Image 1 (tube, rainbow, N blue to C red):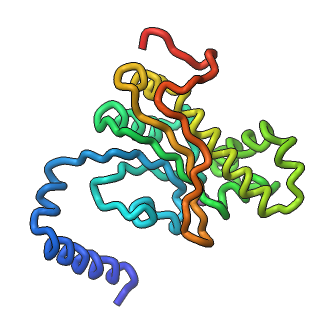
Image 2 (spheres, rainbow, N blue to C red; image 1 turned 90 degrees about the vertical axis):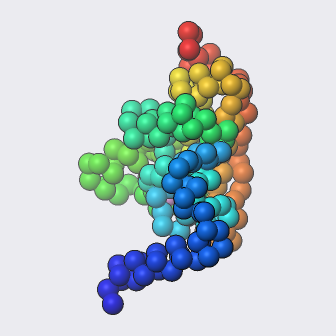
Length: 211
Ligand code: CO
């Protein structure tokens, strides 16, 4: 059997198992999704949002990209954010990075990953530059990478608060809260490193009038 055929077989078994426990499971989900959470995570195959949070289909709206970045010109990310916040009215947006992130490691190196990846990873290099003093004081490279991962997650959360999408939702319904988490590949545990409750203070430079 081909590897992809295993996936299809597993899918049949999974669907059967779900219906056995809850006969209306798929009928209910096919009619409506009301997730409370938007998850912005890394594409890394070892960090599956539902599995590590013990959640089911329908509970988390998910966007993943390399190193879980929030880029203000990324139409994909912004579309997901807009839909989740404006239409699904999620209560929490979680940016979840992970220790041992290949994207963060790559950004700390001088390797040339060719045009597109260089362009993407440059955003992490910028986070390093903004926190150079703290990071350069950490001698151990793994610890330095871990700290950059945390600082990057904090930066991405702050970037969310700089969007008019989030600011408008904060004004209209005092929600969603923003969370920055880092998942540990070695122990499977999530470390919450940062939080911005709805209507948290942001740099006035980034505030929009007439939302
Ligand atoms: Co990663």
